[in-house]
Length: 267
Ligand code: CAA
Image 1 (tube, rainbow, N blue to C red):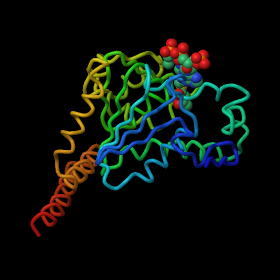
Image 2 (spheres, protein in one colour):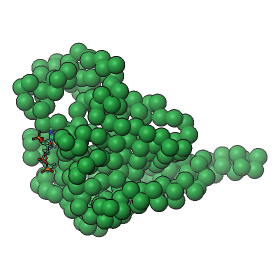
Image 3 (cartoon, rainbow, N blue to C red):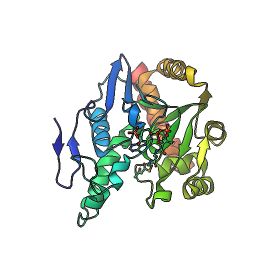
Image 4 (cartoon, protein in one colour):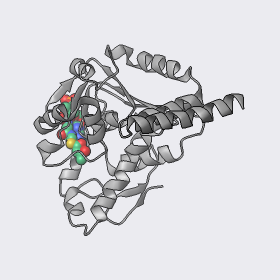
């Protein structure tokens, strides 16, 4: 099923080929990064498979849980990308550096598609994070609406230490959650943020013992599923737009959504 695009990026990859597992149980879908022996390192194939999961998400799904198997949520981008040989079938940064014009940016845009859909209003995405979430791993957790951390979680935006920038959609949620100054400090020092601090500064909704992570995610999923599906989607749309609208615009958006809700419930 793998098709390798010019420039080396895997375009169509099954979850299994990309080291992912995708399971659906009623209204809850679970995406598992399943390369624990490599600490769930991510490749272009991972991001392509994630994008396809988003594209083909069964309509009944309301909750998407993103988790990692083994001791780490994800050690970030596969470090083979930094070697001349790269990742088989996907190239390396050295080969990507030879791409001309907008070709490399287009390749990054494809990778970002794997992360963007997790914000869709019709779903709530939850990252269940234990151990390390480094670079692309931290950004994947940031792409989710909510984060539940095990108390051994270690978040690190490693990219600047490697001469790169975080480019997998993580910079905006980071700034939105912790503010510009704290985001600058976290990224430009590439330091580790532990679970307790993460909860204190708004990067996690909940911190639990590692053995409680699965249960905590299930409890939160159940609570989220207890609300009306369409009202939840409309409310998420409103909340997502709130920071970029004026109060007046937000009030207008509330009126519009509520009129639709009331018409559909009582009309
Ligand atoms: N890519 C490829 N393989 C990786 C990997 C990665 N990012 N991280 C770990 N592995 C492999 C190791 O090479 C090792 O493989 P072998 O058993 O074959 O030697 C295996 O996974 C286990 O690794 P460790 O023994 O290091 O595991 P640990 O639990 O002691 O440490 C860790 C975990 C702290 C995450 C450590 O593995 C680590 O620091 N990894 C690298 C993290 C990193 O720098 N990632 C890049 C971030 S930047 C980014 O993601 C860029 C971007 O978005 C553009």
